[in-house]
Structure formats: structure tokens, C-alpha cells
Image 1 (tube, rainbow, N blue to C red):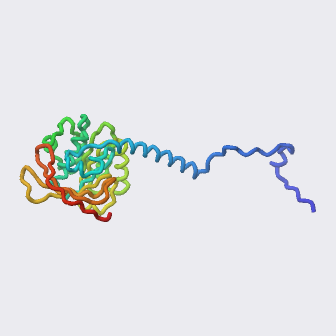
Image 2 (cartoon, one colour):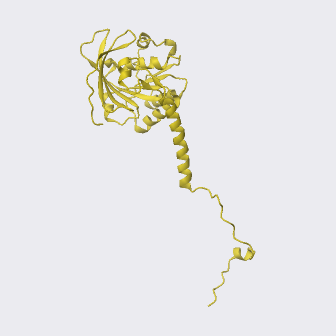
Length: 259
């Protein structure tokens, strides 16, 4: 039985002695391969950027806290989260001491103060020059997050201090990437209720006042909730005064909790 002929205009136009085209020895990658290669390049850039920033550490302004942290201070290019009940907890003072260290080379401190609660003389009392302060008061939460993001991304900024009460997972991640890009410190003061929320902060501290303080000095308990290289939660008690330094008051035995 003879095979039936296939009537095709394309086949009719092809020369009978023309060989089929040879396969490309270097075919383009499949779409999934191209996507994977793009992700690999992006991850390599991020790892390089993180490695550069993670090698730089800013002192916290508190020798006891520096010894408490695995890196000997706060890593630059990272978010530092202070969970505190109110403005009188001492968290802002600790954050300002850290900002002073991060801005020692003359870089500005950007304060994103949507609620209008920041008191500039407190920064001056702790050794931060008024010429280094840039205070921004956004009118909405969206503007607040945008301002924090832009300030963190700026390589000319030493530190950013802000009070973002509610922040979703995606916005938090953007802030973390912005901090890595800019290389400064992102100092976030948040309420204790945020402890139950996921966080992109590399260092997370819970700060609360202790009884026995005076009008010029206050005692604080600092709990290390999260820090790269730490093996659990620990507590530290310090005394904060207006003499531009924090003195160690007492270090209890470390309490290790499951995280």
C-alpha cells in the first residue's frame, strides 16, 4: 500500500534537495531558566550589599548594651526596633544615643515625626547637633512610610528615627531593603503590641522603665528579643541619665526562651 500524498503549499515550495535546518547549538534558555538566572543575579547583588553593610557596626552609646550584642553594636544598613509602652520608657533616649554614634561623621539624623511628639532639645542634650537634625512631619500613614523609605535609602543619612505604629508585612520588607541600600540605621519606636507581629528588624529590643529612677536618671530594662547571632532572649538593666551616656546598672543571668 502506497502512502497517500500530503498536499501542502509549503512543502510544494521547498526544494527537494534542501536539508532541514540544523538545531541551534546554543538555544535560548527556557522562560523558567531565564527567571531563575535573573533571581540568582539579584540575590548575588543583595548578598554582596548585605555583606558590605553587615561588616560595619555602630556603637549603641551604651557599653553594656554593646557587650550584650553579638556584633558589639548595631549593624549598619539594618532596622533596629524598640518596643516600648510610651515616650517615658527611655526607648527614645536609647535610640538617640545610637543615632549619635551613627551620625558621628557629620551625617544627618532624619526624624519622621507624624504625631509631633519629638522634642529636639532632648537630642541636643544627648550630644546631637541641631544642624544635623532633619525633622519631617507627614500628614498620613502612606506619606510616613514613603518618607521613612526614602530617608533610609539615602546613603548620605546616618540614621532615621520614626514611630510607625501599624506597618504591614510588605511595607516592613521595603523598609528593610531601603536600610540595606542606604547603609544607615533605621531606628523604629513601636508599641509593645507589635511584639506579636512579624518583623523585618535585624535587632528587636523591648524597653520598659524600672522603679527607683529620679527626674534626672531613669532605670531601664532592655530585653533582647531578636538579633542575628544571638541564641535566645536576654535581659539587661541600665541607668540612663542626661550626661550623654548610659551606665550599666545590673545584668541578670541570661534567660533563654524558645523563639
